[in-house]
Length: 487
Image: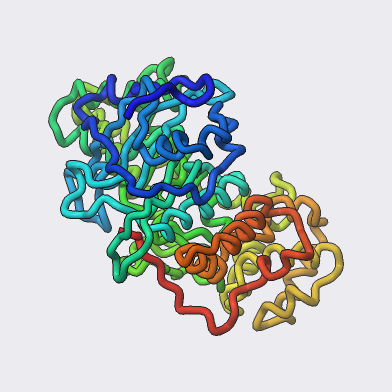
């Protein structure tokens, strides 16, 4: 069914037009009994979409792809990907559709994308569906990440479909409507390169430059500038993940965006007890995507992007490889700089502090936190109290309070800014035990716990005494915690 777009928004099909070889026109499966579960009204306003319309019958159909706005060209996107290190040359949107693009209130082009909308030609034997729980997980975690200022895809809505989904047991089905600056991935370039069609690869790169890094078009070598731009945004992104204790769980190359936005919140989690080896994904049996490995994997993924782009760098293969290697060498420097600056901010220290002073201080503190298996979020939030002269709480979290006292004496002498610390150390994150509690209730039909948690995590830095439960560490009997991708 096709209809006029809600309000005055115009939907476009730019990706489908410009990269038809990577887009299969497709329609979402009919939803038997759609019911809106949650709508992100502030995001709808950003997109120029009328929230009242989206809550109505036609709006809910639009959010499931059962009503296609005029100008939209729903497509399943093609991409490849290294999954746990193994190349799958043809993945693509097996249960998702790019509904179309809209221009938001700031003039930025944004994708409107459906997840769980039914089987596509890329489904590879899957049912193409999604369950309420995993879609609400993506909604709450992505919106929490946005509230913390971490680049991310956004969640516009979750709609229950009325169709049961078989996983380990029968579950209520749902469709997530996701918004992103684009859905271009490292795997998109791997796919284009694998076709052997250099013109397609070039057009894809030009599309990415125009959409995300227009300044690269003015560089002496635009395609090297594209790679360098992606390296820079990914170095910053992964550092931000690490600073809040976020574990993505499935950093395959098809789950790394060109834009530098976090995408695909499947088996993700936030660390409870600080543990560099933390793994939550049930399918990550070797710990490839453990917390501490995320920067290493990001660099590995970016190397795969560089390999894909090499034919565009220079006519001489040897020189092209040199350009790729020189660009990749910047990742570790950029990541280290972002990580160090972020940790100094978490400690309330000035950004221009000499590295010879900052690095030993940071390393010693992380050793203390790890030895005590202190809750990552509670510890850093409590550290601001110590900066105000109240250290009892933070000392109680550690196995060696005396060692902390010695560390704190050196730290305090540097004059940490407690108010600045409260602006970067969240009080509220999507804590794993609270997420599971909310999703279990929502699956059974009760959305109240989900909405209360959403309220907490979307204002993560504002202390609210009535939300004390949402700031507390997990109960001692919670865990070991495992997450699942939802397919």
